[in-house]
Every structure is written in C-alpha cells, then in structure tokens.
Image (cartoon, rainbow, N blue to C red; front, side):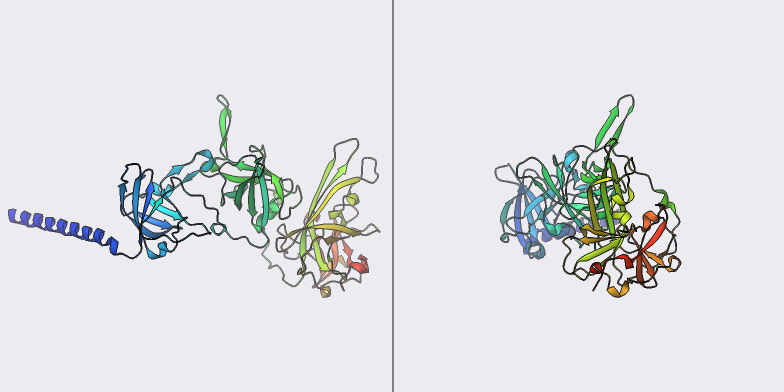
Amino acid sequence: MHRFRYLIGSLTLVLAIVGAVWIVRILRHLDERPGIPLQVEFAEARGLRAGANVRYRGVNVGTVRNVTISTDGRKATAHLLLDPPGALHACVNSAFWIVTPRFGGLTEGATGLDTLVRDSYITFYTPSDRGSPLTAGSLLAGKERPATTSDDDALEDIAHGDLLMTLLVPENHGLRPGSAVIFRGMQTGDVRKVALAPAGTHVEVSLRIARQHRQTVTDKTAFWVARPYVSGALFTGFTVTDVSSLLTPYVSYYGEPGKGVLVQDGYRAAAEGNRPSVDIAAVPGEALRQPRPPVPAPTDGLVLVRISYAAVERDTWSADDVIQRQGSGVLFLDRSGRMVVVTARSLVDGSFTETDAFGSAPDIADEQIKVLLQNGTVLRAGRVWVDAAGGDFAALVLEEAPPNMVGTPSTRLIFAGAVEPGAVTVRAAGPDGASLPPTELGASPLSEVRGAAACAGERVVGIVGQATDGATTSIASLELLPNDLRPQ
C-alpha cells in the first residue's frame, strides 16, 4: 500500500514539473509568435491579467503577455502581442482601453457588461482617417474610458427612402451615434451624429427613421430624450418613467395617429426639455378585425401614392378647426412632363367639405399636401385643378419631382365612357405608400379608400370619393380631367 501511494505521489510530482516547464516554454516562445509587441500605459490595470484577449471590432486579434508597473510607479503597463491581422489595423491614432463594467450615470449608460462573467480585456478603435501603422515596441497612452466611435461605417447603412432629419435638443444627455430612436417601445431608427450648435445655444442630433416607419413622424410629433424620471410623492407613491433608458439614453417620440402631415428629408424639430405628458392611444378597433386570406399585391405598372392633407378652418366666433385627412391617389406623367396625381377633392380641399357656422364658404388656411411615394420619398404637392361641376375629383402636381420618376402608363388609364360601380375593384395605397391588394367597392369604409383607383379589369376608370351624403362612396370618372392634364 505504501509503495502504491509513493508511486502516485511521484507521478503527480512529475506531471506538475512537466506542466510548469510547458507553461514556461510557452511564455518564452511568445516573442517568437508572428505579430508586433506593444506597450500601453494606463492609470490602473482594472483587473487585467496576463493571457487576456486584445480585441478589434469584437474579434480577438492579440494577447496580453503581462502587466507591470512603470519605472516611475505612476502607471500600469500592459505588454501586448498583436497578431498580424490585428497589427494591420493598429495605427498611431488608435485608441486602446480596458473593458470592464462601467456605469456612467443616467446620461452615459453602462458599458462592458460582458466582463461581469469573464475577465477584463483590452480593445482598440481606429478611426476612418487612419494614421501611420504602429511599429514593434511602440509605447502608447491608453484611454481611461471607452473611446467614442462616430464613424459612419459603425452604423447601419442608410437605405433608399429612409427619413433623415435633425432634432434640436436643449442639452445632450448621453446620446451618441448609434443610440436608438424609439416609437411605442419599438426601435424605428437611430442617431447618426451629435454636435453642438455653432452658437452653443443647443445640441443638434441627426436622426434616421427607417423607411417602413417614416409615416410615424409628422409635423405634430413630439420628441424628447428618454432618461429615467421619478414623479409622485411619499404618501401617494412614486412613478418612474422611461426605466428602459437607465442603461442607455435614447430618443423617444410620439404622435397621435391621424394628426399632422408627413415630413420631408431635412425636417428640423425641437425636442421637449422633459418627457411630455402624453397618453398613448389604445389599440384601434379596426386592428381587431380578423384578417382576410392574403392576396398578393399586383405589380402591373399601376403607380399609387399615399396622400396626407392638413389645413386650418378659421372661425371668427369660435376656436379654429384643424382638418387632417389621409388617402390615396394615382400618379402619372401628363403631356407637359409634369408628375400629376389624381385623387378625391374631399381629400385635398378643405373648402369642399367644410362650411362655417352660417353655412357660407369657410376660411381655409395653412394647407399642406404631402405625397408619399412607393419608394419612401415624401414630396410636396400643389392642387392645380378641381371639378368645377362639384364632383369629388381633383388633380395635384408634385413639386421638385426627380426626373427619373415613373408613373402609371397611359395604356392603364381610360378617359372615356361611363363607370359602372358594380363592375369595378378598388386599388388603394397603404400607410407606407405600398399598393394594397384589390378589394370590392363598398367592402372598406370611405376613410380607407378615399382617392383610391377604381379599376375595370386592369385599367383605371375613375377615382373613389364621397357621395353627396358625405359618408358613402362614389366614383368620379377620369373623363372629367381636362385634356392638358392627361397623359400624351
């Protein structure tokens, strides 16, 4: 028995010696690995150990060989060995820092949370205006805080049709490129750039709203910088709002559905100083309707657009009334080369639907007509013609339309013949500007199909508008449109 224990002990000792020799050989041969050795000085090591990773854009590109104290005793020096791929991206203007859990307060949020369950490591960032490559043995001053990365390549690419706008905030509360833009708790975009105004009076924040969400932003939308806010009293209880911004501040916004008109690229808005008191609208009743079997939207050349209209009816003896409507229209190129949209007059002309308290013509002011194209672009439009005979029919001309725009071909439009309501289908544009599947006339309320195309087979014969009762649908024939507004 004693002999067996002696053998086990001897074997353990031999294995320990072999392991120690193997580790020493590895450490001695680190200098023989390809790459470049660097030294980075920090105020303190923050738990950094030999063997920790060195990362670039989240990829391991090197190793921390050891951590020592500088000769004057004022710095901790991390000795790194960068692999060849990492060495290609390390330049004299690269920023190195130690990644550890950091909480920057309610404005800057938390970083380095992944090191809660693993050792600290070093990462570095190289800006797009790269400097000269680092050479072996370079001594660098490390950053004590994570570097602020503002390169465009660190952000999601801007897609065609995205809304690009500027938000003016009284003070930046930790927003940075890449911070989220939130609507109803869902991310709809991101912050692209943060800069102090030249006069120092405010901060300008460049935002991108994704194309599929740009209809959520109108000229009535309220913006604010979300950060935790405590309200209430000791005996009534406290309420904390925007708790989700505790780690990372973000831009939040909200607009009442159906209010305001769509905005164009370059729109500038002022943010609220504090979170406004807004009541988030409940889920609308029509959203509870059971969906119909999906019908693929046609792609047959018919170009539909989404129209947003806003105006104010001036009243002498009472408060002014705000008029806001949304609907559809048919886009085509007329014989003069203009981009024309035919739609319902009740959608784009407040004087057609409103009357003052005495039954006379209303005073309509501040009219705005915006058109959302299928590619996400928003253009301003002017009303150039309405049916003088009182029909619910009007024509718009787009302002600053790009020369490469494509409209509905003339072969798809019929400008002669009576319209038989029982033989037509309705084609409308959805809130995002995309064409919706065809429906039967009368299957949807007037609010959903106002200005839509009435089609007989594959060709447009008229525009869906309101009947004389103002509630049911009617069809205005394209035959009413003047010759100079028709296609060639």
